[in-house]
Image 1 (cartoon, rainbow, N blue to C red):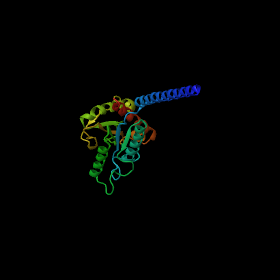
Image 2: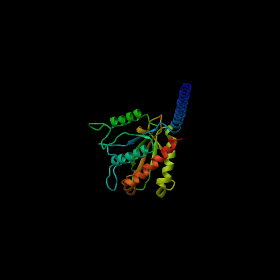
Image 3: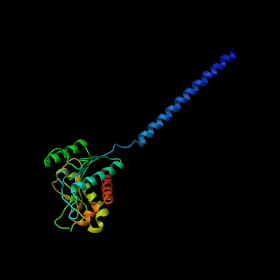
Image 4: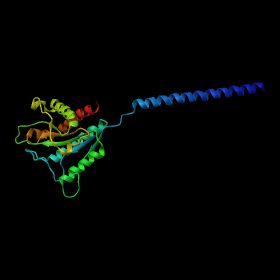
Length: 234
């Protein structure tokens, strides 16, 4: 009888020890998991609004060589840029995804611009990039130009223009462009950096051919994302 009681006592002690050990292991694993989650949880993604300029009845400028429409090139470039930002972990918001304008019915420039502004406000972005194509009186000018309107946009404008001068403009422009400040509606966001990127001069047949090439648009979009992401990651 004594042996049976003693055996039962030993079994109870062993059971208690096993439960205690299991609890301790569970606590340790939970602590490690919590630590791992804290260490490797991704930061909240930053948001970039990408605006494909013009659209619908508003074609923008046309190419001197093929007559390609600015609005179409803007959209193609903007969509590629959005994909690149998304792949890099950003939240990319487009002001338009199709050939039409941002408003239905008869085209109204004021209503269109207001719709774009509302998209920007709803997105609460960290940066706004508006994609356009350039035009000059003659075919002499080429390259990518950056425009901005507000003080808070100046630093990003300078960094992006410098990067584009080094990566896209060097073969034809020497030192390249300086960013230009002016009164641009889509760039008049006083709280976050907002830029217009004129991706090519459609008055220049070489620029027109380049920007009509999907591979060139991909390269340009990659360089824009590179500079903007580097700025936002500071």
